[in-house]
Structures are given as C-alpha cells and as structure tokens.
Length: 207
Length: 376
Image 1: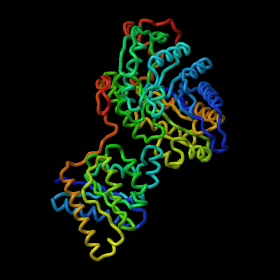
Image 2: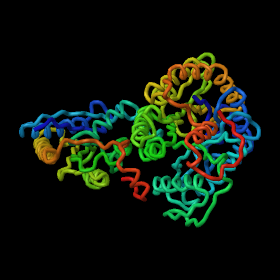
Image 3: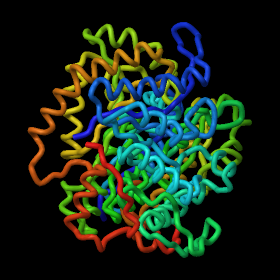
Image 4: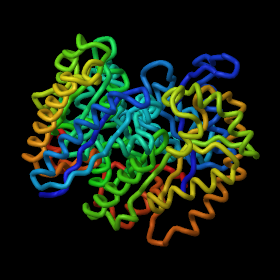
C-alpha cells in the first residue's frame, strides 16, 4: 500500500488547545488503523491560528499568501482530512469557516473527512450535525458517520475519558476505511485547460 | 518593446485629505494623463471600461477619440473592452471609426468583466461569460474581415447581409489582445487566433501570470502561429516611485492601506512581496520589471498602473515624468538587448499593413480604404 497523507486541521485558538489535542488523537487513531493494514501515513498538522491573518487577507485579495498556499495545498492534496473546530455561538468558528471558504472550489469532492469539535458544554454537540456536516456535504466531501465531540467532562478522566477514546478509535477507523477505498488524491489544477477550442466555438460551456 | 500605462478610471477619495474628485475632474485627469504619457515618451495609453460607480470610463472610444485628436504618436488601447456585454457589432463599428480618426494608432484588449450585476443591465448573464466571449469575438472578427456578413448565434439577433461601417482602416482590423487573470479558456482563445495575450499581472501572485502565459505560448505554437517565444505577450505592472525608496513607501502607504481591491488587507510590504507592486526608487522599478522576463520570457508590451486609489493628478504626472525620464529608457534598452532577433515586436497598424502586402491582397477585406497610417 502506498504512502497516504492526512491533513489535520485544527481551529483551536488557545495554546495549548484542547481542539488541537482532539485533532491529534483522531489523526493518531486514523494513522494507527492505516498502519495496521500495512500502509505508511504522513500527518500534516495545520493550526488555523497560524494562518488567521492570511485567511482574512485571502478573503480580501482573492489569493493566499505563500504560507497559507502551502496549508491549502496540504488539504487539497490529502487522502483524508481531520477537521476540528471549537463551537462558538452554536456553530463552527468564523476562522474555521473562512479557511474552507478560501479553499479552491472542488478541492474536497469525494474526499474523506472526519469532523470533530470541542466546546464548553455537551449541549453544543449537535453543532457537528447541524453545521459542520452540511458544510462538508455542500463541498461534496465524504464525511464519515461518526463525528466526535469533546466536552470538558471528556478531558477529566474516569469513564468519560474511556468513552471519548472509544469514539475517537471508531471515528479514526471509519476515516481510515474511506481513505483505503480510494486511490491517492490529486488536487484539481485551476489552470488546466479542460476543453478544446473547437468545443468552445461550438457553444460548449467550459467544464 | 512597447511601454505605457493603463487606467481603471476609479473615482476614489484621497485618503490623505478626504477629498473626492468629481467625475468631471477625474475624466479630465485621465485625458491629461494620456497626453502626458505621450509627452514623456511612452507608447501606449489604455483605458478601462466600466458601467458602475465609482468608475467613470463607460465610453472608451469617446475618450480615446478625444485623446487621438490631441496626440501624435500615442497608441490608444483599452484595458479591457467588455466582449461579453457589448454588442460585437458596436465594437466593430466604434473601434473601426476610432482607427480612422487616429490614423491607425489603435488596438484593443478584450476582457469579460467580473461584476455580476453589470451583465443583466446589458441583457446578459455572468454565468455565460466564457461562451459570450467566444461567440462575440468570433463575430467581431468576421465583421472586420468580411464586407458582408450573414450570421446567427446563441446570444444576439441574427444578421443578414450586414456590413459593418466604416470598414477597418486600410482593410486591416485593429490588433487584439485578450486579457485574463486565470481563465485558461482565454489564453486558449488568444492562442487559437494568434492574437496577443495580456496578463493583468498586478494584484495577483506571479504564479498566475506564469501559468497563463506558459499555456498561451504553448497553444500559440500548437495552432501554428510560430514558436512559443514568438507569441505576443503583454503584462501589467504597478509602481510608485520617489528618488529615495523610503520616501516612496511613506508617501504611498496611506493610498495603499485604503485602496480599493486590496486595502485594509495585507501590508504594503506583504503585497509588494506577493504581487508585482513595486514601491521604491526608479532603479528598484527597473530591476523588478526586468525580472518579469525571468518568468514570462521576452514580451512585447508593459503597461503600468499609476493613477488609482485616489492619488492626486499632480502626483500621477510626477510618476509619469519619472517613468519617461529614468525608467522606460533604461528598460527599453535592456529588454531590446536581451531579446533574440526571432522574437517579434507587438503588431501595429503599420506592421499589419506591411505584413498583408507581403502575404498578398487575397487575405482579408476587399474594402481597403485609402488611409494614412501611423503608429509605431
């Protein structure tokens, strides 16, 4: 099995961040599952905090500065994506949304995605189903069935930690399974010519 | 190689004093800038075309006709003429008329326009941007090259036995550039016809320009118009200069920080690194501009944006003095010495007339008027 890549996107704002921690656990669970099946895995962690100014600049100018370009390329070229955000006001953070807003159109089509979130109370947990899952459905990504929410009690030890661990392992297994089913990802090239001039002259719309 | 300026024609508040020029002032400033361009020895003045505030140049051939009457050598062009929302019949007529009045000192650059609401004001839909561009330009070419045209298409009422008048000067249509930032179909269109390709270049990372020009050159050769390095390429550039680079940065920063398009976003330093914007000494502009050749190859036309973001007219005229006195003479000499002999200059009316004489009278229109010719 060839070398697979996982982009691990975390929109946590504090350092250290429980969002980053959850992202890392999910990435490790996915990697372990792929490695167990005989694959090699490269993790590409992306902390959106590091790109916050660049994301806003991209929204204003229409193009990403070099460091953000690298991050966007890492996501567009990944075989699987772990996407984790804190929940603010009942939804993903603005930074999380803006990052995916500046990703080239079509980048996530048929791309396996594992969604997860952190929040100050378990009452936020359905934001995963009401906000994140529809956004990735719009992008035509393949979102795995298990979405993982970590509330404060999940980090406090005891049985709660065990329950989170079980969800992380299950979600990672689902993402690994979707990655395994697909050939290595190739990001779309926006400058590639996809039609002949004769087709254009004949009234054909560009793809 | 041709050097010139292109203007968007924006009415923008001067952020240093809060003053907003009237439309009348801005229009008069644009033509003053054009005349100054000729005075300082530049080759080309190109105006944008817009149909929404805060932009004034909705009627490019009116403006260019006025400039033509008050200049002798300046080549008049557009950046860009909207091939999507203008009727190609009117483009054929207007620019042929301008060509006669300007004694051939005319070419034009076609573009789609990226403002969605403008399209329906002219009965069109931005979602048809590329198909409109393809169909309208194909018709425009026929109107300039065939005396009597029968035509029907998807976007315009059919034409029966239609003759676009006046016929192009000397039977030679104006040279056409196709402008696009990142639509490969437009590079393909320019290559297919052997027309020029203009990369806006400014406000975007150089990688866009490099990819688009590379595609155009490759397809230009594919369609048999010459080798890739013989394709006709134009580039935009954006500069602000003072003798000391620190003075240039200090003076331009408030205009940069508040500019339309990129203002309130990246810093001047970031944008200067990430796009062709150069703010500094004349020598820095020379070095940066010569560097464009490293990623697009030898090219034929360099247009600078110098008059946007609320810069006062006096400042713009000073920029033109610096361009004409210190920058362009050096660039002209350096680019000319670097360019191999088999790489052509940009076509002009005179060169197109001469080329047709070599090719024989069979090609093109039969209605060659007895025109004078000019242009360099």
